[in-house]
Length: 172
Length: 283
Image (cartoon, rainbow over all chains, first blue to last red; front, side, top):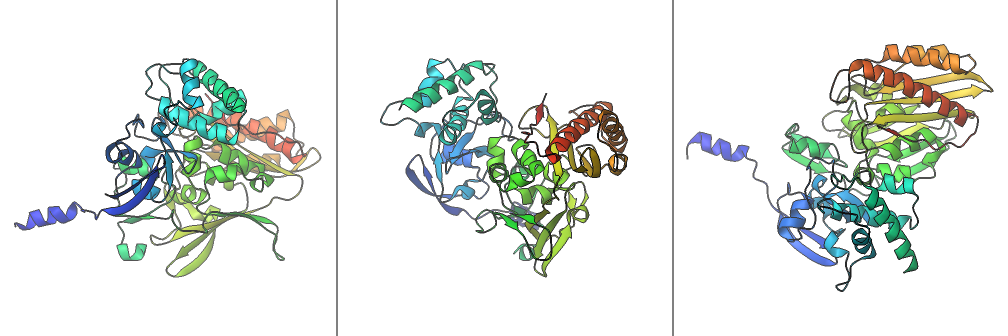
């Protein structure tokens, strides 16, 4: 092997895969992953859960928002190995027994989406909000979804969807 | 451990700045040492030592969201303002106070807020622990007093005396982005008279800038529209902004004037005991 090839190989810094066990939507995924794999790549490519979207890939848009141990995080801004041992909820984990989650139903009923690309992230940000604060004010709703960009709706119907979800979940 | 891995290794705290930098290839470390699995590094404690004033102590890995929701941190309202206004919910759930200081991004929020208070940074390395005052800790843009194999373990903030109040205000074009400019003000008053003032400006220089001239104009003066305007003009002169995508230098200087005025007004009312919710400003 010519010397420069060996140098190139070592310069590529081939990393050893790492064992992780991540609970996604109640199902445990024990896998070996590259340390540099992002959580969103793990969800989409390893778990085949493509409901979590990659929008900007720069920690801006929030399309990749999932819940980690109940808290909203941008899954493009975390490595999969950092989620080892934690519980992740993606949009696929919202519905139960074939029935839409009240947040999902409210987004549909209020026309809180158009193209739908940002919707999974918005619904999970909503889930953290309503689990901590079941009856948020309009200002609190604005703050809670400030990290989620929607390029279609202008946000008004998203507010209405979150208010509707809050009402419907209160009755439940 | 970082010593063994060599100069190419870096610590990873909340990752909300470092991971985007890695993706853009602005940072290219050979190894990352993840601090997130170390227990006992995330806490908020109040400490009333026999020899010193009361202080709040923050573990380096304390998330912005934990500070935002902490009743203890509300004892210093400026800290709550800062924590609650950083980026968005998702970033606050991950980002840490220690990571923010160790990164020393001139657009970051914590250094600018904390520089108006008596803040010390505990550092730990293979040669032991040391305490560095924040003003000596931040050396330059993205440069701190930390040695390559040292990390931040704790941040200690002295609780200001009675009749003190502060405010931290940042102007942002939208929630997830860095501020265009920010102002931190901490005042101690006796009635209407300002006894002491600390004013710092963020995002308008290579580090947070203490507007010492502006502080001097306030000390011993009655706080009114005129003295506040004089201080804000002195702060304008202290700012050293650069033209970038967030705005022109002149626009940022004008923003500094407005932010300092408003922060002084909120700080003054808080120093008198009023409860005022601070709020970041969005474009």
